[in-house]
Image (cartoon, rainbow over all chains, first blue to last red; front, side, top):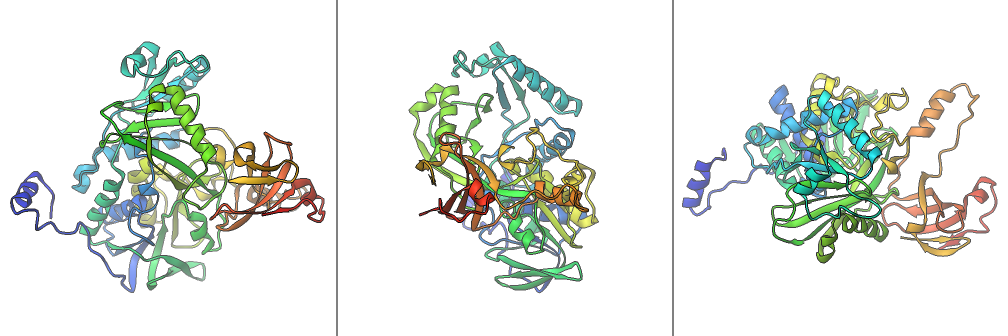
Length: 416
Length: 98
């Protein structure tokens, strides 16, 4: 059923009794043309674009739990393309353009809200660095505005502008940035892929990869073996574990990042705001909760929870920036797993195993990448080689010395 | 998460700085395949799900480098040794078990 205002009225008049499930509960077949491992946003987006852009619909998405139960449900829903380095700007800007047309593409309300992303700066040196980043964005056709103190104060009067240690001098603003509804993105891609014939198979954990003479032949799962000539892995957070099934070591460490939501309050902040002197970012959900986060905990972990010193550090940053936050209570807080790469940039590429493709290394920025990640990964799988947009996100860039280190931190994953 | 420093005793993890997996060892720069070995040493990690030996620096304490054996699923710490003892191949006389 195509969703429309008409279908909404029609179903409402019939007592909402006839709504059908948005996707089939598919059972695994013996063989597919392409298997995607991982039913998060990236895996489902890949399946959608394989079917839509490349005519490949004999595709299965295998998910060990329920779709969207991993990092797609654990992020802070921010979308933006305000990067410094050209490969990143162009890739994330393509993602932003896909976000801007996503609802009509998927026939699903993913609640894209271009409310603006504001990065505060607190010193002359930081202003210069932000001006440089804004100029790099504009040279690549992305919107960026450098705001002075008076301009940002008119937008956000409640911040602590005269903080003795970190006075606010201004901000870099990307107006087209904002948020999207994370679960709806998963459901929208699942429904769109399903409507084109893709099988979405939940509760089906991949336990091994079948490799013969250096070629992928299929996967072993908790629901039996499934054959496929091409397998795409999109399991960020657990990429090293899947890669180990193929005997590959990854330039990746698994880390945790924590996020928080407060009790719901009346509309308080109408943009995404980041603190430039500590690591803290915040936005407000449509339900009224303030959604915020900060640094990773900084040690390898597969536990989807963090530790208290990081909680303290993040909330200290928040209260330094916006003292009024101290009055609010945190309702929930959680942790999500990160594939932290050695240069802070993702990987979308072939692997040394023929027919095995890799999508991972999303660090703490995977959500905003969802559309472009699926789009580029689908191209890479269908054509057997990367698209120009992900041609720099290669697995061999580390040994070759072509790292894309946005922050210039070197091969220390917890600093990116 | 709390780490038992062999010198200072049990402290919160906010006193420590993390440096990652302790198992990679610096290759011989004069070796024939030094370029490939160095790329693997700098960039590739086992990233285990389970016990891992890793380096922590007690920055807000005794400034010792430690080798901590910690489970990456549960965060349980089973062994802590001075990194210099590990490097010198000493018996784990300073080992602290929990």
